[in-house]
Length: 161
Image 1 (cartoon, helix red, strand yellow):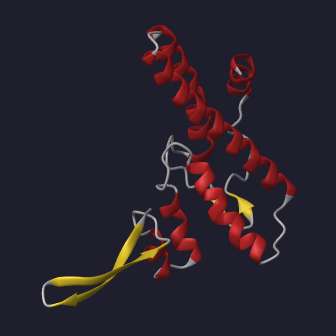
Image 2 (cartoon, one colour):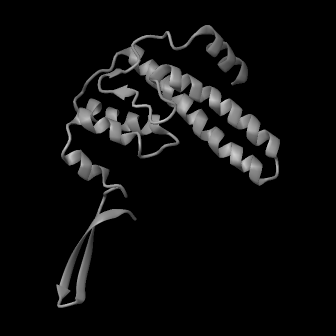
Image 3 (cartoon, rainbow, N blue to C red):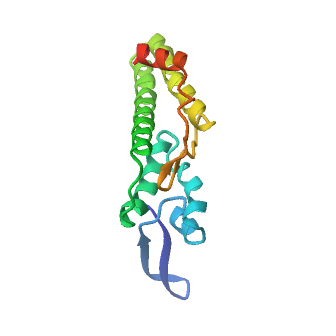
């Protein structure tokens, strides 16, 4: 249970009643959002989950788009799906590497992290950052060109995965 507010009823120094206000994330992101515009708030959401920042951006962007009945261009939708899948792969590799080390397979741990770095290279080429990408934006994708997928990177990615 995560909450950030408590309504406490006191009688002198004795606590008579305590009611938690549920629904806030542990960092109080909802409170931060109350004083920001929707565009100003988007960079905050990448810090919710550093393993899968694309997903936190996606849910934050998809909500207002669906509520507003806004159609995202097909190209942006495809790019979003590709980036989400890459994020999922990187997250799974981060799980698999330490798992292999825990069961005594130290060498595969390093191979797995090498493959994860290739995904992060793609993120860096597309967004300019390896983590905390701030890639998604409302009604479009931030990536306006496909130049970040050069042939060498694409070939490496296809061979590995």
